[in-house]
Length: 423
Image (cartoon, rainbow, N blue to C red; front, side, top):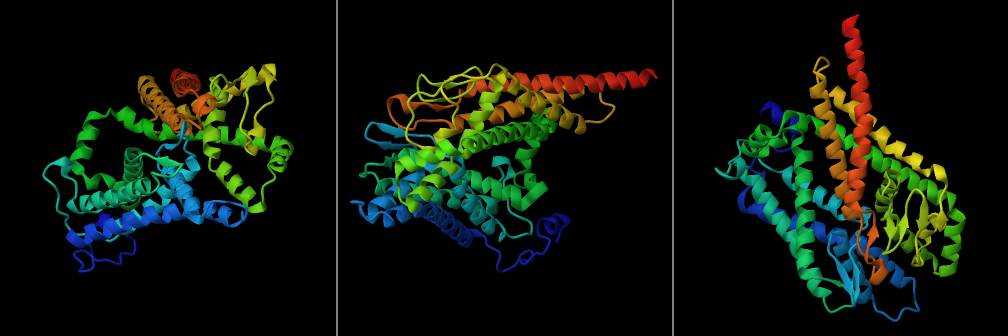
């Protein structure tokens, strides 16, 4: 067994060329079963609260199939499909809810990848030299996962809350593919490039080295800004617990219904964190057409009766010093600049350091822009058709603030180095 194999499997239970290693038809069958099972398990996890709410509401006139249909439709929403009910459209996907199918599918995919033969794998002559066994595992897994999405979409097509078949195919296929990629990265660790070495080599030859170095620092910056938004959201919730409790009392739901409602709101907490980050950066966010919450003013408009919305600022002007929150993404830019300096040689020119820092800021801004686009969407018809932060404006603002912070750190580092050389 090679050194790589021992790194990949510290305690290998399947030796190279083992008779119990999966390949060919058995591998494709096991992958298809794993993909379908992952979809069903995650759907049951998401649908279970809807069933519990139905059981706890004896006055409900709908039967358990309707409750299961609603839960299954919410599973499709978690997979990125858009839901419809008459003229109402729901496309806002709670990001924490999406984590359930992603985690379940990733675990299932990795269990399949752990059973691949560790000997010399056969490869396709084209397609970047990808391993045949990886392709045999990935394609059936993704296809069977998406097939469950098609069945659920067709089964709920006649119900009030439903998703289109094409949306379901696209959303579940993307979730299945992302889960397989994450499982590959986890299973092969630092040697994931060996899965398709020709493709990896071509990418490395075309991507500038400063861009490859910038990915890590850029992700640090994106996570720092997201974490700051999450902290701000939690602070606002704590400060307005009394108002949130009053809204819960107004609903007058049973305890199980309250728990289900609380869990549903919790799944949108990452979305709220992105919106709070956009507020700190300057563009703010809105909860429907004609609404905005910015540094200077809060005009949330007429809101649906969701207790969590009690954490929003009161309508009207905000304190004049709220613009100082922009220092948070600027500080995140300083972190990006510091991390960028750590991935280059100490004696590198300031141009090299600046290139890596700028590229890292671009990476962070792109990640946050994509996250903002995924965190927003529609929560209904008319005014609630647009909820969230303006993604492009948020990305542009945060890019400028990151560049400012990173520029200060790189500039100070260059001046210190120049001063040390003169001594």
